[in-house]
Image 1 (tube, helix red, strand yellow):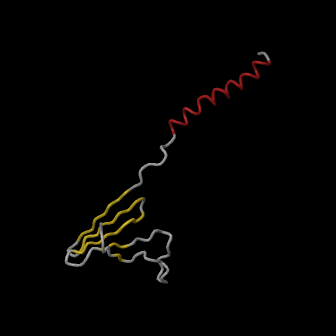
Image 2: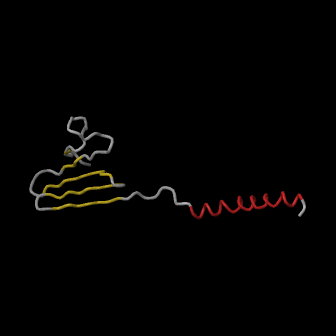
Image 3: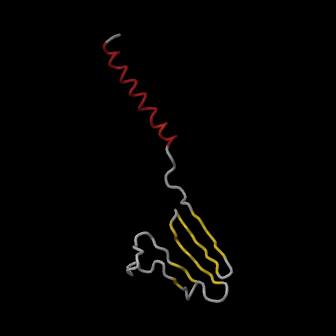
Length: 103
């Protein structure tokens, strides 16, 4: 083999690897983003109906509708950034909220 052919053979292999690698990377790449997992749960008994909405496993809303009188209300779920200990620093998380005016 000539000395120039010995030097060009590894270069040809490297060039072939570079040319084919982007095509294989595109076919194995997972799609970016995607839809989040949404779960709606309804719990119902003789006294109330509770509707819960979870997105990616985190509570987004909890709505309670009493069946025998009383106004419907919403429980504000903790968002993970609050401490839910009993020292009163949790803000409104876990508190009941009544909506007086709805549009």
